[in-house]
Amino acid sequence: MASPRERIVVVGAGDCGTRTALGLRNRGFEGPLVLVGDEPSDPYERPALSKRVLTGETNEAKTIATADELAASAIDWQPGVAAVEVDPDNRRVALADGSAVDYDRLLLSTGSRARRPPIAGGEHAVSVRSIRDAALLRQQLEDSERMIIIGGGFIGLEVAACAREAGCEVTVVEFAHELMARVVPAPVARVMRDRHLAAGVDLRLGTGVTSWSQDAGTGMHRIRLDDGTELEAQLLVGGVGAIPNTELAASAGLLIDNGIAVNEQLRTSDPAIWAAGDCCSVPHPLYGGRRLRLEAWGNALAQSEVATENLLGGSAVYNAVPSFWSDQYELTMQVVGLHEAARRHVVRRRRDGHEVHIGLDDDGRVVSASGAAPGTTLARDILATERLIAGRASSAPADLGDPDIDLRRLV
Ligand SMILES: Cc1cc2nc3c(=O)[nH]c(=O)nc-3n(C[C@H](O)[C@H](O)[C@H](O)COP(=O)(O)OP(=O)(O)OC[C@H]3O[C@@H](n4cnc5c(N)ncnc54)[C@H](O)[C@@H]3O)c2cc1C
Image (cartoon, rainbow, N blue to C red; front, side):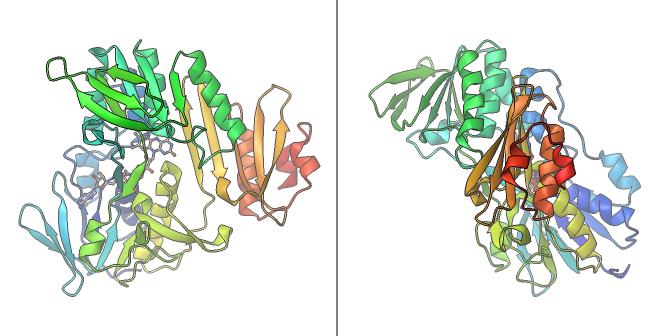
């Protein structure tokens, strides 16, 4: 256990950092505890930003903890101020308001930020990362008839679904020939593609943008695609992924490798500093120690638990099965494991007509599973495969594909 005299500082008050601060108190840490966040609002969860907040179903993202709750847990919550530098020799974090906070143990949970679309005019594309971004886009949606989304990843497609529900014409321009090609097998991506086509989204796959301009009078964005097509819209949205916020770690001279490089206990190259969540890359024991950086809500929570334990002096290892979901229209796409690790897939054609695609590695071990269906239809199968992945199980492909065999029996 960290001594009560030791001060723990958490920088980044998103899902991972806030839950770690709360977790430290729940686990009995009584020493000084500081939570620094550069956003002015109470810490909140992001997933609803590109879903229910955009459709107007709710105005608020779900709050993780209010200022009062943080105060009640004796967490020194410092909102609206960025940490600008870490001095590891003096164990001090400099803040943007000119103040500084000393630490004995430091957690960096600085998350990631939207990548700017790599096209001319990409700096004019709006993105959805924060509650402010979502509120602004929702307002802009009300006054816009047409939207162009650059990138066919999860967030871009969730925005597309919300925009269609709001009656906005949407074109998605994606350089790859499939949507979400990195994270799900093509048949799963095609379920989502067909749903977007049915909703009237104009999908331009395998296409790049060659030029951009903006009408000075109307503010309309005009882009030209590499097949010569010209498109115009009031709204230009970027959906080309995220990049980790590593600048603070770099200021401390920490090792960076596609994110802040941590070991399986989430410790950085400095023994007094840990990193967790979207901002870090970690060697994953389930995938041969391959270094992974995950941008997923479940990962932020799983790493927060490991960080909490280890900030208190423990030696917990991060080995959770990666998992992700995306809601588009009435469909929920669920992904567990790592699609890239799969060498072949078994298709589990369920009696309800929906499919789960189970990925196997060269040794026949289950390494991934994914599918898309309304609501929680696939949840039971996906949960069972998650346990197969965690147990490094190799099951007979015929059993995995047989819809009459309950996957839980194979665990
Ligand atoms: C729009 C959207 C929709 C999503 N939907 C899903 C989904 O459906 N399913 C899913 O599994 N995942 C989803 N995710 C991903 C999930 O929300 C993230 O993986 C998760 O929020 C990561 O948590 P984190 O704490 O690591 O980072 P973040 O939540 O990004 O929090 C990091 C915080 O640190 C702050 N910060 C950064 N630098 C500094 C600094 N120098 N000083 C102080 N503060 C700093 C940031 O402003 C931010 O508040 C979504 C993400 C977004 C943006």
